[in-house]
Image 1 (cartoon, helix red, strand yellow):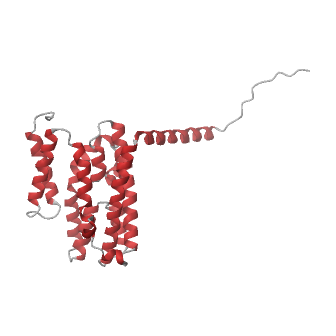
Image 2 (image 1 turned 60 degrees about the vertical axis):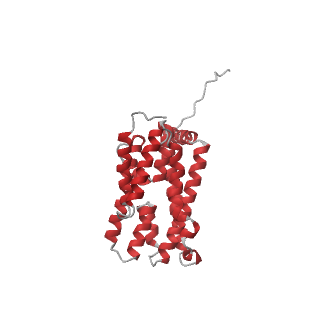
Length: 260
């Protein structure tokens, strides 16, 4: 007796199939994001974020050595995530100012994030929790790596890579620095190590390659002159806001398209 052989199809539970497809889809999206990050961008972001992590280490150590409880710089770094504002907040509070005044000063100092946020708004979701996360990860560094790029995929990759990596390394540095706040590390003046110049140096290195046209260079120079001139006249943080007005004025005087 002969028996006809038929194809045997294994029975697979529908939920397992959907779960498998979902896992593959997530893996594909992650793979696409990795391919979007070129090696040069990855190298530059790593160097900048590592340098900022060292500055975070200094902040944590100095904050604890000034008498601030360990949890304060750690919480500030997670919730505020703004290096300059964190330094100003701790300096004002330990100097006798009220926390409210210190917080308002930090808000003014971070007012420069408004135009930066407008510059990267096209690559973040319009609604939902991802937009809130993107707003929290917006920094000078993430904006500086994003704004010079034109391709949406490259802009998106640069923004999220810089934001996430900087958040991790900055908070790790602050935590280690705060834990070592009572050691010899706290007695080292950040200025003697050049850490006080780290932020300006990093931003300058990111800014210069983006100034491709004569109009861009003129606009940046106008903003820089306004900021430097305002330093002895305005409270901390306001010169950066005044620089935005200088940039707008310089852009208004530049011909459309910019001369090479």
